[in-house]
Image 1 (tube, one colour):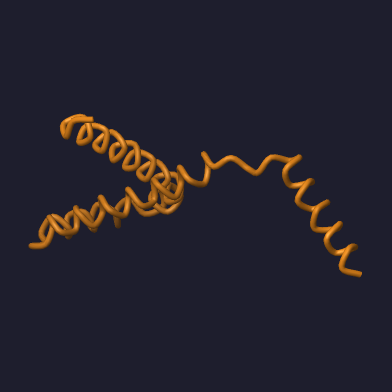
Image 2 (spheres, helix red, strand yellow):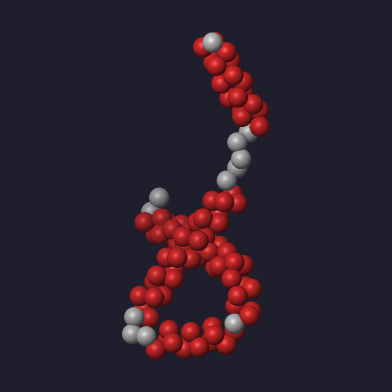
Length: 100
């Protein structure tokens, strides 16, 4: 795979993580934002006046990516197969019975 293709694949994954993180953040905070819209506007104005706005934006991007990874891991992970779980319990019971 070429470096350009790897970079493109990395950017695609990053975009998915950021979108998922933004969706998770929006869902988790929609109630509080609706109730305090004026406070949010004042907070955004204060953020724009800060000298470390670039660092804050980078931190926000990292946090959104982390939230996105957690959300995707939570909802895309497959549960263990039911028969596999039953087989493990049966083996554990059989081992316990053999020890007695």
